[in-house]
Image (cartoon, rainbow, N blue to C red; front, side):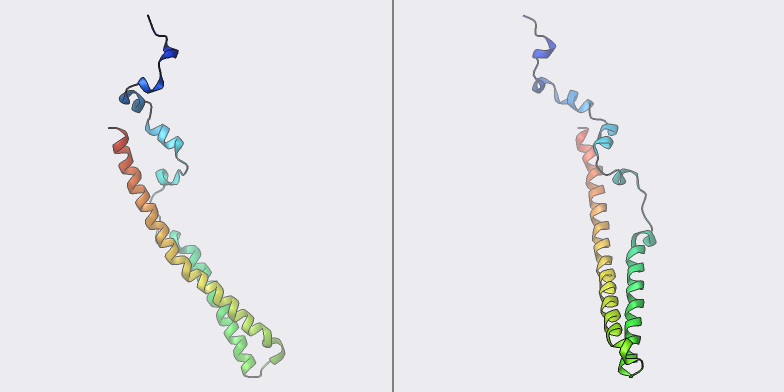
Length: 129
């Protein structure tokens, strides 16, 4: 009795036959993020430019709020600086803190990317066994 090709169960294929179908192009096409495969190392400025800009803007608003608050305490333009000084001071402080917290988050993200790249490089060795 001969078995037709349709009657052969998928589990009967040998392990080497199933691994032959898995090539690097298949792995690349199955990857969700191509950035793990294609990007070169980024410079420090490219990594931290957004947090630095946010900290700079926050610091400028903070200093502007300090100047307006100083004008209020010096009784110069008391009506306009009554609300604007503390308002700009608090908004500038919040933006500055967001930028300061953003830097360690970016460092942690960069470490996780390097660890995931390390594991993906080792995964190729195990796939071709």
